[in-house]
Length: 216
Length: 216
DNA sequence: CTGCCAACATACCGACCAGTATGTATGTTA
DNA sequence: TAACATACATACTGGTCGGTATGTTGGCAG
Image 1 (cartoon, each protein chain N blue to C red):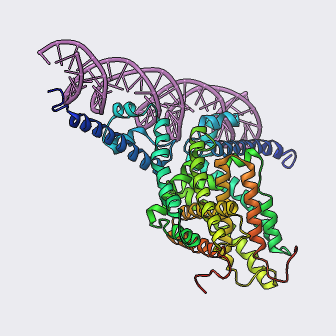
Image 2: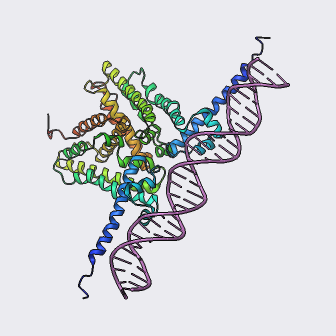
């Protein structure tokens, strides 16, 4: 009788429901912060989106700030990792991989109008809250390190020009991506972002070592 | 008696005082919006900065939104014009002029931490308020047009490479400037901005037509 | 069956918000 | 000098904010 029906399922169900509530709060907060910015994001709006009430929120998070930090860590960081770090790990051709990542930047009207989650929050909160700033800086650093590493590897394999400074080029790439994102967000026009992607891709091609051209 | 002492001075004094109050409100609003963003900028804080009260504000501006629009038109637009349009008009060497403008980007810690007024407001308000978005888009367009025009002129004079598309290069330059501004703002580190300026300058040099090099 | 705790829901709080209604001092005009 | 408009100051409003204190419910151990 001691081993029979120890009811791990019921416990698991409860825990899973609790985790699902937390996840819904995170997703709702992410969407609302994306729309209105962190400071103007209303907890009531987030709660309505998540379909729960204040009690649930303050059970899972100790404050609005903690909720925001959790969005950075559990939503934004994995997103950037999936788009800019994992795709660059152990690839044959770094330039092709970078071009692919750039071309996979969302260009649907809604995405262009909303901009980049990472950049949005960094722009708004970096001067105002050290907790946000540091967490976002870690993401930017990981992004830049991933690009720089793949460029360095390309240099050792001879596919990337030796006179390119990987760290500088990585920073420049990120600046271009975020800069064009800003321009396209203001213009509210996917064409601006598409033109930006073309220009970035052209610049990336110029980093390829002579004799390693894929085209032309 | 009809022409004597028609008291234009008193009227002028009154008008000048009124105009000064309006100007102080604009400057205070600009600073507070720069610090906290438009949405989170408190009118009470702006009034305290300007040293006036609600009555003065709503005498000169019909709403917070109108005040914000006036900041864009009367503070931000002239600032961008003075830094990126006037310095590029009828210059001998467009590349040198562009390099000069880039090198004149403020890199003091306070400037780097605060970011670019134009980009700050554009990022925050473009998706939320069409009035802000359009006014800011006009500034971005004027900026890009000024850069593109000076590049075109450089092409006719032979100092800029013919294979450069002026409009594309202008957009890329602005994207780089704003992108690096974002990265430096998040890093809160003037070194990031200085490194960005060096990279942008290097890219600008690559636009110079062969045989027109200023430096080896 | 009972007590207990996790996982919420509900009701409420003071602070702050943009905006307004009204008061008032200082010229200007008739 | 009396009427009047300009250029504000003061006092107040309804609404929203993040946060808290308390109530409620369901599963689960003893």
